[in-house]
Image (cartoon, rainbow over all chains, first blue to last red; front, side, top):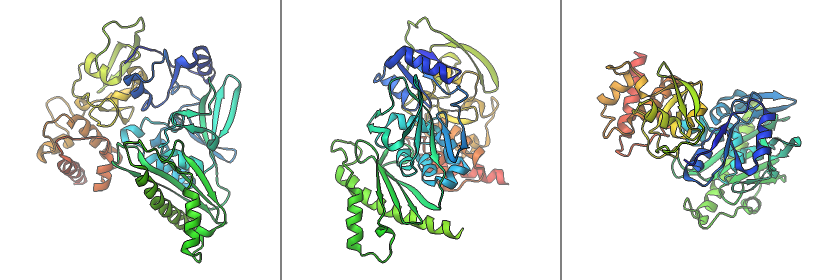
Length: 289
Length: 165
């Protein structure tokens, strides 16, 4: 590995200072499951690595605050998948966190790192999109909140400004009953990234939110409010037309080694329909609870 | 991964508790926990293999959770508690999971075995009575190029069964 300096700031203020002093020569280290690979293969050559895990404000913590569930930057996939509030209110996020990598990876990988890395295949991204999550970014100008749909740009690129870091990801606690699910297709569990990863949410008033990743340069959120897909009386032709509109934002890369565009688009349709049915099912169970 | 022979000016003093024993050492920021366990502390049971977090050969327990030690900087583990395969049983003896790996033929070339044992040990701590699916999920981060998966799963299931009595 190329030499670099290491800092372990004890406060958020100090971390922001270090990022301001070093600019793009500094990289943030959270779980390290992406960063250390890239330090080793030389695609990243920072002068300074800033380890944020021992900053008390960012240490692994999931807290309820002002009607939101706040997930700090140091929170790992293992923490998220096991948290009873996440499992109760944000089931698709718990399910997505539970299938990232392997046990070893989930014990290190963080939600904040997953979104900052901005892989189109990030498993947690579709779940965050359906729940309208907000990214809490802290930088030299203080704190600002970024809606998750305005955060992703393309692979490896987000709307975080230079010198900013993600302090937390927050999800509004649902006001009404809803059903949600995460599904993915992968070649090999425990190792490979998703060929298609998606999440779906339906509410009692038949609003539907579907988000999908690994089928384009960034994860995409689409919404549907006509209720057609949740209406058992709707004709197959009507449903198909609506579904096709929902899937129209997919544009998988023709050069990916993981799966052909044809395969991904076909699987998107299969998983999309399954997810809508599963989310509706969960909503119905929610009603009788 | 070898450490550059000309270390930069920066050497960081870290303290680890490894297999119950307090160790202090000086590390370069870019040395991984794997490097330090093998090259500084001479605990070579932990294996270096893929170096991208896919094979699990370098699995160790850090502060109660298993990790790929190739993806952890040694300095990140400072102050932490590490258990390697050498710490699963006292010298000269075998833990139940180790004994069952032998009994069920779960070891062929043996290179993946330390990582498999650490993942199996972790699984049985979290889920003492796992289903076959739970065993497969618990070990999904550990590859075996000899293809001993059936025997490994049998060994883990047998260990859980023995513990039930």
